[in-house]
Image (cartoon, rainbow, N blue to C red):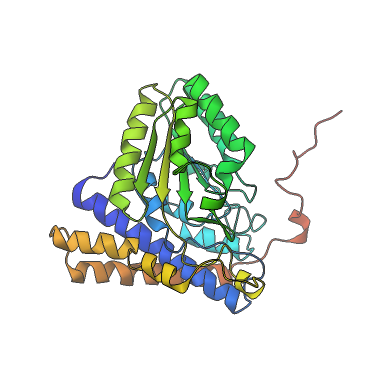
Length: 329
């Protein structure tokens, strides 16, 4: 695992990759080149990057419908991710999964889903599998504040605690489930306060600070690898955009103020990390701008790759959906 400047610059690069990637996705939706829903991760980059840079390559993650940031943070290929979003055969799921279903088992990305909290039971299964195989892999399961109220979330946390599974439950509390404030649906002050009911540590962390998320995840990973069971991390963060692109065209009443959005933009995770790098004399402004330029080129090339890639052929419609050949009855 990287350390020192290598780690800090990797975190910067991956946050910038997510930012440029999802800015591009937003543009594709607004120009109607990408038809359908896309849930961008703009403003939340420090959460996934902080958590995933605390993991080994062979550790696992499960994600959510806001799924572009998770695989990029784990080292995923932005070309294959962009191709998948545009429905191309060169995508992660051969163009059949789309924006909410990116997976790459080779680097521990077990997949995302549009079904709230559905990744948490999968994470428990992967963690149990790791134990049965006799290895020390851990699983980070990302979920949102809305998903924290789903039954599957609580069932998974209870099971993981009873069996002391090596899982880190990471709640990306971006304040709103679509248009509903978590203050209207959560009875406790912090979602992490619920951890006490499952006899696991509950940690509230600044989700705009990539190093704070990283350090909290490192501690949770060490605990999980030592056989001490799961941890519930709550990263308090914010999404700059609506729940999904285009939602503003059908929402009749505003659910948050422009002043609130701007207050959170002042604590932009990339700006905060860049300022820290300069203050600590880890990187210069010129080095940071060079990363921006390299990342911009990488995303431009990913979009070109996706546009030039072919669509899946009709004959492959059912490929990868069923066993081939079908087993005899």
